[in-house]
Every structure is written in C-alpha cells, then in structure tokens.
Length: 521
Ligand code: GLC
Ligand code: CA
Image (cartoon, rainbow, N blue to C red; front, side):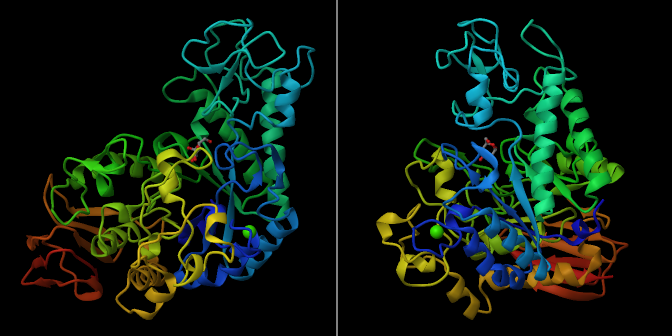
C-alpha cells in the first residue's frame, strides 16, 4: 500500500470546466497547472482528472479514441507531463481516468474489429455469431458493421465493450477469460497504464471497474481475478501507484486489488442517504420530501448509511484498502443543490473526519450550484454539475477570456454566484471552512485514512452522530434542533474545532442545531 494514500485528500477536476488559458472557451491542462497553488492552499494533495484523452466526446471523453494521446483541446502529452512534474513539486499526486471497459466506436481497434476479414482485433470486442440476433441480457448494436454479427456495448451506443471474456460461457461466441485474445485485451490495457505511469502519473481512477468480465458471478470472481493481475504488476513495477475503483462495492473491489473504492449515489440508499435522499422529476426538481441526513429539517437517518458503511469498512480494514467518500462527482447532482452553505459545512465536517480517502469535487468548496441545463456531450442530468469553475466576479467568472457563447457550458448567471475570490476574503465562507477542516485533518494523524473508527453514538432517526478516531472525538449534529447525549465513560477534554455551539458539560455532549465539533481526549 503506497504510504502517500494514508494522508491523501483528492480534488476531482472535470478538465473541460476548470480553467481556460488560451481563450477557446474550454478548460485545459495548462489551466490545471496554473491552479495547482490554489489546490495546494485548499489542503488537497492529490488530483483525479476526468479523461483527457483523444475522443469524439460523445460521453465527455469516456469514449476514448486514443489512450496514449491527450485530446488536442486540452493540450499535448508534453503539457500533461509538465502537469505531473509541477504537481509533484507542490507535493500533489495525479490520478488519470482509465476507461478499460469500452472504447469509442472511432478507436482504431474497433475499426479493425468491424471488418469481416478476421484480424488481430476481431475478438478485441464482443461480437455475437449472427448478423441479427438479440444478445439477451446485454446492450448491443446491430446493423452498423460490415461484419455479420452484432456487438455488445458497455454504456452508450458509442461505447463498444472490450472483450475480457465471459466467466460463465453460455454461447459459442462467448470466449473464456483465459482465451489468448481476451488476455491480449488485458495486456493492451496494462500497456496503456504503463505508458502513463512511465510518463509520471501516480495511478488511475478506474471507470466502471466491475464491468469487464461478462456473465460474472455475484462475487465478481472473474473480474476480480483480472484486477489482481493488474495489481500484481503495480506492486512489482510501480509500488507507489494507486488504483481507485469506480465500483461502489469496497467489500469486493478492495479484495480484488484496488487501494480504494467509491461509495456512489446509484448503489442502494447508503451514500445517498447522507446528502441526496430525495426524488427528482424529469425537470430535475425535487418532488416530495428531502430526507437527507445533512438537511437541517432532521428527517434523515444515519443508520441508513452506517449499516452498510461499517460492514464495508471492516472488510476494507482486513484487506488493507480504503473507502472513498465523495462530496460529489461529475455524474452526481452537486450537494449545494439542496444543502445551504451551513448544511454543507456540517456535511464536509463529517466527510473530512471520516476514515478512508476523501474526494472533493471542484467547485464544491465554494458551494457551486447545480444548474438546470440541456445536455452536453452525453451529460443529460449530469450536465448541471459540470459547469465552469467560478474564480472571481466579472467576465465568465474568471474561467475564460472567450465570448460567453463560446464557453463549453455557461457559467452560473445569478448575481450571488459564489466565487473563490469573494470567499477567500470572508473568514466565515465555505471555502475557508473547507481549508480549516483539511488543515485539521492534516495536523492530526488520527484523522488520516487508516486510523481507527469507533461509533460512540448513532441511533435510528436520531441525532447527533458521535465517533472516535484514535484520540479524537467527533460530534455531528446536522439537525436544527439542539440535542444532548451521554457517551460515558468517554469524555473528551479539549475542543480543537467547532462550527456552531457544541460542548461537553457534566458528562453530556450538548450540541446546538447544525453544529460540528472535534475534541481531544
Ligand atoms: C462512469 C463515468 C461516467 C461515464 C460512464 C461510461 O460511470 O463516471 O461519466 O458516462 O462510466 O464510461
Ligand atoms: Ca482552452
């Protein structure tokens, strides 16, 4: 396990929307390099950059056309290498986004694979053996290729599934995972990884990591074997490199070789119950009640999160891996959509004092809003969480010098749109709260990824939540109503961080509405 992960706090960047340095209306790698200082001052020491490779951008770059070439709109391979070098000078690690499950339909491998004449790439993708037959249980496309078969897709139509084989082979066209051509697919992906690791990157966030082997069993035995193979390569040749899964099942992905895995909105109610326990209609507005734990209305239930989390946490501990808690990501509605800055401050207090590796999505540190926008590059409802970073008042909120109509996506047009510049000046701002929380995390080893978590107070539909991290006690009361609970025999002595009024008094933990505190025992 690379040591640096123990103290890592990640910052996720959607490169399209971070900072445009050449006035073409779209963010670029040079823009990220120029903002490294900002990221460091914030307290983040690692980056995850969404795919920045050559692509027709039908799924915002998750449709890769050339794994080894930076998309010209973001710069060149040399710009990316320079970003690695400059980031490392600031003590910042950089994860790229690896998309191993599928390519763009414009990838040269797929162009070859579509030909009726058999060639080296015929089995690089998954094809059935008939020109038109439903591939039961899979997404597939018929009628597009010269080849007399249909091909499987992994996500959108533009993303044909790479062939790593089938765990349970049920049809003659399904190859086993040890078939030489399936092994060749994995080797090709390992070659891509080596290419960027040699160029200086520190690892990968792995897109749809659970999707590789088809007809897998519930434990994902086939897919896990494949990732253990990749991990063996890293342990041997790149022991400092990190693999973070987009899998949503740390209990499976960590034993499969990942160093960390996200909890995601789409997987059950656990992570979702924290900040997004609501239902949206087709216009992306909330219908009915919002029962998120971090809403001040106090209708949430921390057990909806903890029941699943604690099981996953124990498995991660046994297997030496981490749970990655996110503020948001490029697929998720921003937390400022339903949470006020005050509610966000308590949410982030929790996020940055929990074990594992926290991920902050760009713009969440200032409470950037979710904008209701038409779809862009296959974003659909996700588009509203992908708008340009808001640096300062004035033209395009400091994101770009281009004309407003030329921007990748519009900036938040409301007069009170939060900006970095304004919040830097305000000691009580969300930005300064995030900085203070990350400073607290870095100054106290007990708040690191690995240090123990023990729940001291958590009850169904009740407040507050109190937990212990080594020699520290953390108490969180997102609800508006004051609460007072007894956690004897543990009574902390010294408060080292507080938002709102909270204290220990005569053995009781007394918390005003919407407060958060950390004490030393
Ligand atoms: C992942 C990505 C998402 C993308 C999909 C297909 O879920 O996070 O943005 O659309 O995979 O690659
Ligand atoms: Ca640009």
